[in-house]
Length: 261
Image 1: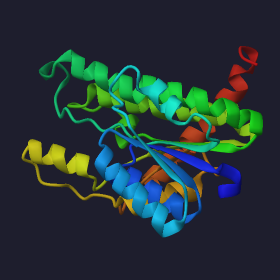
Image 2: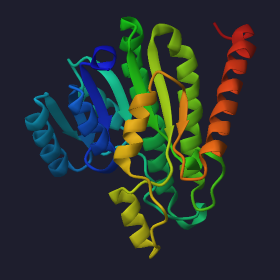
Image 3: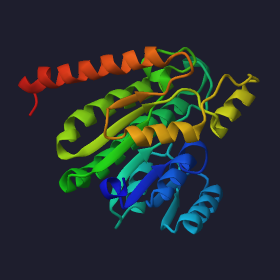
Image 4: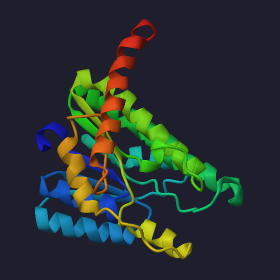
């Protein structure tokens, strides 16, 4: 895997939860890690631990993905590194509010993080991957992408963008040996979700474990454009959705040849 996607993996949102699981599993596979998150202390602690345990090189950068300049700061942090795998993990909705019951600025921040920052970084890192004809992109979306969601109008919309964006990139880049996977995640046991549930005084629903989900995504990168993480009893339903989206994507490849090169 390192030969195809290495030597450096960039993980956006790497300090805890799913991002930390990505960092650990990739370090175990021998990847050098550029780890980015807002909170620097836990990020550096994790980087030091992984470097010591697995003998890989690590770099860290404290970047707030809500800020308009965050994409450029991520690009600057990767200067001089051959990024063969870009993992976009940051993107939880910390507002927990209906559309009109939060300040619009909060929604602008979420749009910046989940749309502008991710697309700008993908543009920057996918270019060299296409030239090298090897590399991978794994963007974590959400089950909220599959339908509208009251209490998550902007979040759901941005996650639907990520899903369609990944499918499109998969189609555009697969002939250059660059793999793209959208991970459509159910609710996972992460600190950000626990904080939101506590804020709204809600009990935790059945939650997926980040390590299990990450292992599944890494095993499927290069095999399909989308994977929806199922809960027990939903496997057939989600497999049917994946199959339907895959067939529609192949149809659109043919249908758009009259319009795009």
